[in-house]
Image: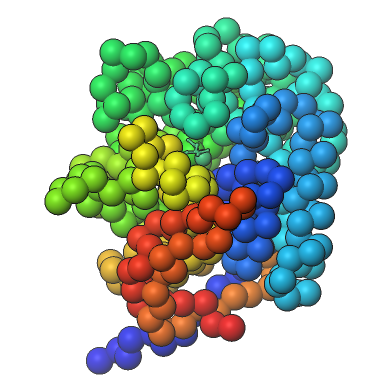
Length: 356
Ligand code: NCD
Ligand code: ZN
């Protein structure tokens, strides 16, 4: 009989989709991210958004200043590498793309359909009208990161991702045959199948919550606001399909936590914010999900290889060790201005932890 795995050493993971926020929030989010990840793709949905290379450079400097004063090891500080994204608006120009591509710090362009999610009011109102900008991204090999949901008020919230595949994504892929595209935080078997059916320039990120939870977890026996994110958790069959593709060894699927902090009082409210905070415990969460289907041998590809390969970046050479010792997810972390941050699955015990 094979012995259960006690320790698992992985090439250091990268997080290809994270929200670090800005200013005082960085004191919490930066050390959490830097403890587990080398490269992090920083989402640009600040207020106001990161719209051009100058904004991106200034934001990266604020992150690096925070890193310098954070209480984490020198080794983790040395390898942490925030990669920036531009927030695409109706006014993004070909010149913005050209300058960003040549800046050396902008890794991708993020497209939020207007009104899709937190801080997306400046998002694109007519995606199919962005042809010149997509063509410029194609020319300069700058990937397009998509929040893949349609936003028309009459479309049911559970159908928004599928409608985006059917009505928008297929057209973009057909019109820009060499544009690299990441369908971010996929939530349905439809999205998984769609991505599998495309060539290798189309990839997808998957969050811990969409692999581990479904809408019953969020809604049965009382509403759990800390499980509410967008795109919203779907039914169990979708959760199972996402876990299956993530653990399949397909290089099209890679780690993107979508860790998206909102203070506890903004989540536990009459109109609660969308976003789950998972950054500090993401590696134990993903390990627990992979272990639940006996696929720990597939974890490293998902966490540490496939994203880098998709972006054409070198795979990390340093490592992190996970250990099969239970850990309790903190009930909350201190956040700025005396507020707190409640993480995903707060207070629950996971079988895996990060070895010191
Ligand atoms: C994100 C946020 O809070 O910035 N929220 C979320 O529910 N995922 C935005 C996003 O990625 O959609
Ligand atoms: Zn996000």
